[in-house]
Length: 489
Image (cartoon, rainbow, N blue to C red):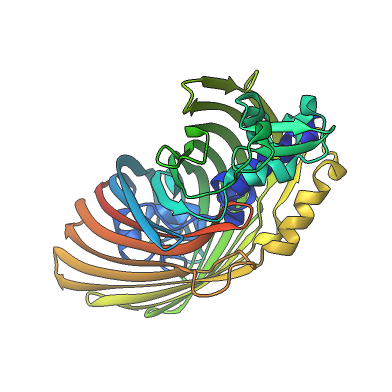
């Protein structure tokens, strides 16, 4: 029963709310370089640079670049705009939010006079890895189909008492009399001939879908690093990752202007509340063969999320032209618990530095999303065999690129810019669906105190499945304003 509930939930999640690239495996595995304003301004390309607290979540060897201790605090403002297109009709929505992107502390112990092992550093940092805050709005007329068609096809041949095991939506629609069962399993919906002896059929209803999500994927990293002769820097960190994902989705169909359809409108509301915690290990090295050149490499083990709590409930309301009204709800909140292993990551980096003038830095990141894997809490591999095979079939490796530069315009002011491209992990979506990130920032301060301000812009588009064969396109635009306040000691 646990397995069937999970697949019912996953099917509902994919067919009615999100597309395949929004499965939990991808949602919890994808991260984008965030952290301090300086790091964001330079596209997150800090794998070979170090000396920034955000490196605890990317290459912990960079912490041993520090010669002094440091504390940072980074608030961030985010505005998300989503533009959808369905059946040639466009709609949009936006959401503004505030969050803390980074808090970090590093204690450095360095002795320039020593040869060999010159020092070590330890640090603790909170970095935001992924932001789930968004609002989507889809609106358009459909002359060819309805979500009711999808549900009646899904449950054809089933006993009405067990509809919830196949489709929660079909179960609630049946209770609201939008579906009727005849002849021991033949289902008719309110758009078809035969539904309560209806003699006409047709479409033309207005479909509306609102999705509001919030939450984030965060990491607390505890790191230790060392410095050998100012040439080789090495480090490791234990990452404790937490995430919270909450989604409210309201789908409706309005036929109030259509005389051949018996209902005025119906609304299907779903709520998801997912909480998880996991652990991983990050190791890295930076080599400085000459003063103007650095190379870096880092490996991130998979994150093991254990005991993920996935809570779901749904309601449906329907108003008929006869004046009848029906409401149905899931009997209890559905609580699913499972484990997830995300893919490992490998990062290769290079940086060119002109002291007192500026620098240029590059990161390449490899992630194979087909390696994500679900398990039950008692590690039964076969319980999620089908969905794990689907992950292997649908998802692929991505090659993520980040580049950033900094120019020192005065002893107290630096200008920064960056660009990043994150590949599309979904094999089934063809075309240019990468996530593009552009950023620009300014840094002010001296050796003891500093303030960094950055503006960054994320843009990506994708195709999502509303239900059955009804797709829609969506473009997401994120604008981040990030500020870091820091002191050195």
